[in-house]
Length: 141
Image (cartoon, rainbow, N blue to C red):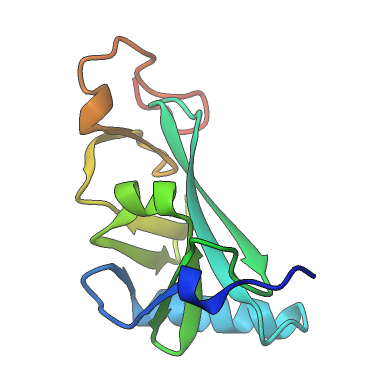
């Protein structure tokens, strides 16, 4: 495990940066307990791909990396790299329990359009791009 310079990590408790609903906090805590990794954090990231150009991702990670923003919200830690933070600032992570399509949902004020699946979005920088409309998994076209 690499040591990280603590000065290169921002620790925030400001809900305006990234909010996690009580439902999502509960699920994150349950997952950490089930996997027996109670000291890990949830890395939330944005990567290229998906049917709208950008897609969300999540993974558990023990320690932040250099440059990460650490958001403590509802007793859970979230890790966000600088590039992803540009797209996620102000977003809310929720957990929806549904018979069809339940799971984590991100309400992102930085997205100008979302795919119906909720896992892919288009930013304002991509608004003029002519790319796919919808995906095979969500049925949005």
